[in-house]
Length: 174
Image: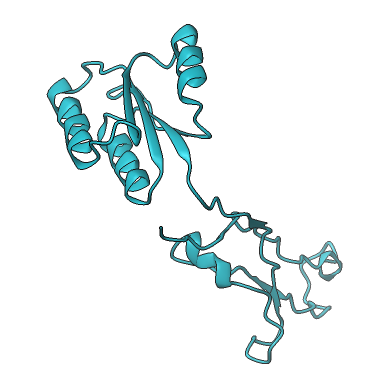
């Protein structure tokens, strides 16, 4: 099974230091303003790539530049998981379910199969997942409404998912 790198929490942006003493109340240039230090927040292509970011105290920083400490590391979720994917018959939900299954997790899909868009597309998404992962224990599919409390309580009691990926939504909401 593939191990995933630890992800970072979203970085917190720091406020630039404002020099309140440089403003004397009038607009005359009698005082020389104190140079402001520039705050830099490093950016990365994805959250997973941010694990390598750190404070930089080397001489490569520009003068007057201050580094913002990186956010606390969110512990990675390693090992086998059972994930409930709500809205798992839709485009995004079925692709999320496919990726979870591909990395070795078990998936429980709940979708009410409403007709906001062609139900045949949703049925095909579920059929494709079932063909790719025919093992009954790896993929469970339920047709039901996530707003139905009794249905969801029974599902949680039976399946015992450890994680929930909430992808259910109403398409075409006006």
